[in-house]
Image (cartoon, rainbow, N blue to C red; front, side, top):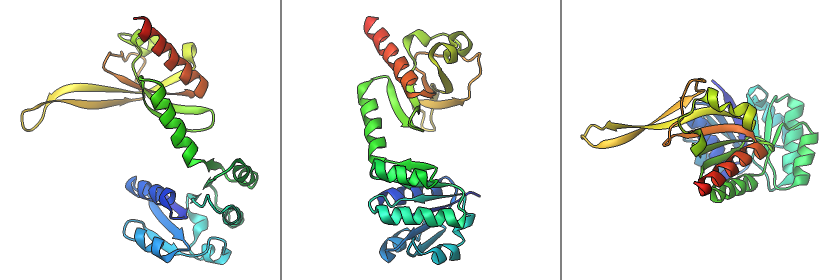
Length: 236
């Protein structure tokens, strides 16, 4: 079972801890505020009140053996940087950190932190992308250059197989899943639509008007396809 540590139990850290637990992972929740530690004790694997800049305290909970550590201390750069330095010294293999500025991100990157996260920027960009297009249902950046996006099937994709569309060569994106709805009857006899997700569809799968597709690609390529779909819709 995967094991993670979350240092800093503000809203960001608690949300990560809760989500990891729901996904079946073991989570060590860490903060220097006893009240915050108590608030998460009921649902995490282990909750510990300690100073994350205390190397011996971190070693005592065997933090070097977790799969990854999330430093959710964005507001205090000094503590965040010192914590990252100690985790690197202990030998933690994967470190992700919340940051509040470009300078903070650069410092942590230089120190070997694999991923820095600007929560407000991610949320802001996702909301903007959802607002800008009626085709987009979810928009998730997985790096500064790549995104995973759920969109309605463009009209010029309808009735065609993935092989015929050849989206990787034509649009530089990949379709990694197809969401479709199928009419069925529930236990009470009501007519309902049941959602089905076809992950890693085959080249022979055909897209239908009511489908949604989940695509992955560089941000510019994803945005270009969405714009083409919007333009075609206006022209129809």
